[in-house]
Image 1: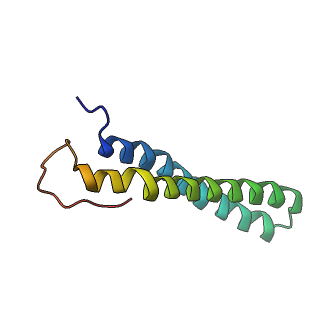
Image 2: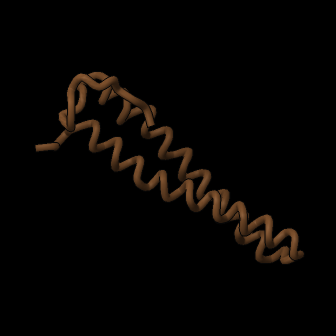
Image 3: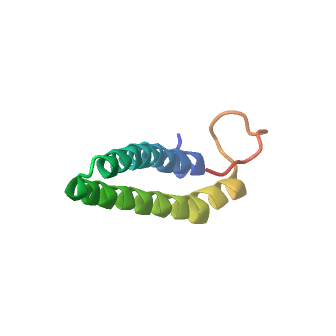
Length: 89
C-alpha cells in the first residue's frame, strides 16, 4: 500500500533524526557539566559523542534534502489528504 511512497521515506529519516537531536542536546549538556567540574577525560569522550551525533544529523539532513523530499514534491504523498502542501524535514 505504501511501497515507494516518499512520505514513508521522509518519516524513516525523521525518526532517527529526532533521536540524534535528543543526543546532541544531551551530550551538549553533559559536556558543559564535565567541563565545569574539570573532568577533562570525560569531557573529551562526551565531546566525541557530540560530534558523532552532529555528523549523523548532517548526513540525515543531506539525505532528506537530496532524496526523500524532492521525490515527495514530485509524486505527492499517498498518505492522508492529497491537497496538503508538501513540506521539508
